[in-house]
Amino acid sequence: TAFLHGDLKEDVYVEQPEGFVVKGEEQRVYKLSKALYGLKQAPRAWNTKLDGVLKEMGFTRCSKENAVYRKEDKKMILLVAIYVDDM
Image (cartoon, rainbow, N blue to C red; front, side):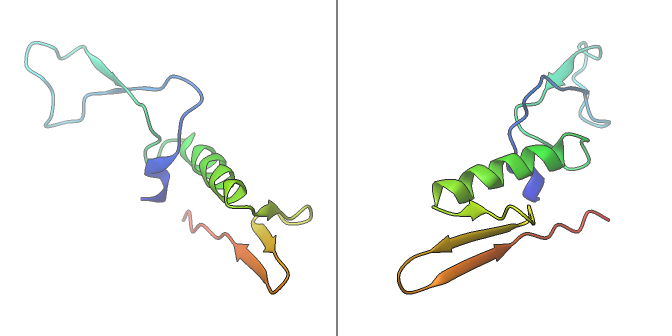
């Protein structure tokens, strides 16, 4: 479900899903506005979205490990590690 919020950088079109084909318009396709799970662009779109949100919140990405973000102030250091099980 995390992939559903990623923005796509290119146009992606899909066929009408089986069982939801509009009668008389069987040749029409849908243009996606957001990434879908299983779409090859979905992981990158999701990562780009998450990266932007964390940076807006004041986090910086670790230069040695792209899946770790850090936010620091006078009293604390907050680390966020990202893990996606894509199996």
